[in-house]
Length: 94
Image 1 (cartoon, helix red, strand yellow):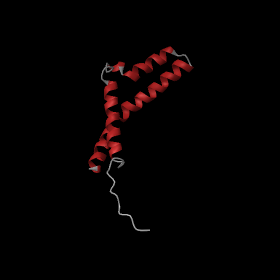
Image 2 (cartoon, helix red, strand yellow):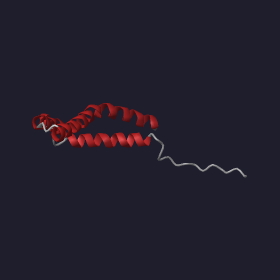
Image 3 (cartoon, helix red, strand yellow):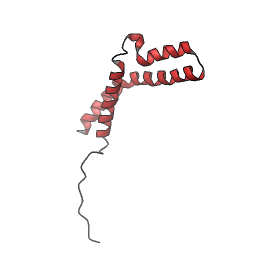
Image 4 (cartoon, one colour):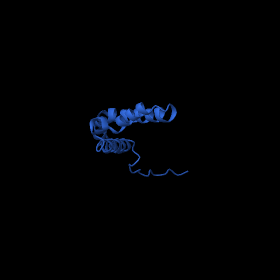
């Protein structure tokens, strides 16, 4: 079962890597250029990248990012064995 989750986790990681990196870098860049340097033109361009308004994907891009992250969390947490039932071992007499 863990092998199956590793397979899905690896596939999801490859699929959502670039969109998530773009989202993070453009979000941080937007904050830096808007708040610190007050460069409105660059900040406006970065927010278009952040929301994928450049390609007309602003309606579905956040949903895809969110679903990708949820998938990574579910498959990643399932591989940690946090949710396995622990068997109680018989105690040895002291």
